[in-house]
Image (cartoon, rainbow, N blue to C red; front, side, top):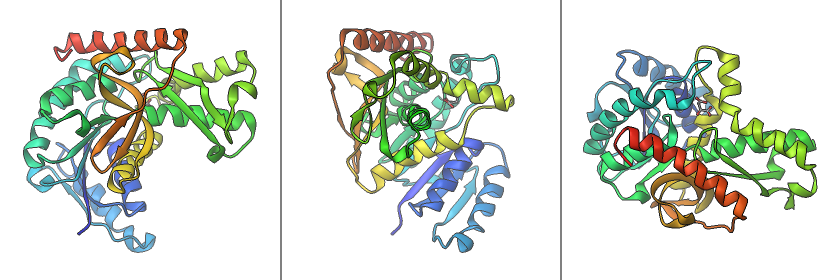
Length: 309
Ligand code: LMR
């Protein structure tokens, strides 16, 4: 039997995530949204691309959570996106309400599922989902580190004029202005990029990474990025469905790791069939730890506002 992945939210991120899953033939997909007709139309359209792409996936659009029952993974993209001049934090109250309602319905229909949270502000929404779902932390994981590190990898590969495949990069912390790109642990074909790119240029690439979402919002004007965010979520889906034991930077509920407790923050995670299978603790310099603590505090402040700290 094929695996089943539900995507909540049939907007740009959700629909594009469905596209990546189907294109990779990872699972059957249920696309659900409150807006009538949109998930149905997009799912039908995507399913009609399957003969051309030679992929066997069922793709169903719906407004009814009964259709999502027994999903192996549920990717939550529901919520509003920011517009130019807004920060992700400006979405907090609206998306908190949406996330709370969605999680309750999702877990009722699929009590054994693994949740991947994509809505913003990412870490606070992951914390909301965790608190509302009542699932173990292994089964509620936030997306954004994969996205942020993919942005950093793109900029490094362009700078060094090498394949993106040769570049690995780590970004820690919350998915916000205070995120912590870790150049020291980023490499080109195993060579630390700190030996290849001079410090001031590296700082510019780090800053561009931290502002990566805003740069796209500024171009689009009507919304935010969706190709890379959805691809990032689907890399996590694939790691779990295929039990790959893949190390990816994700938002995880920390219980003392990195000296942080009771909070979702981006850290290196091992993803496999059980979801979050391990948090990898790497040694940080005092400066990096301070930056991570600052980022965690920014997440905690948001969580306090919505009562999930
Ligand atoms: C991103 O980083 O692209 C997303 O978090 C969307 C946004 O608002 O920037």
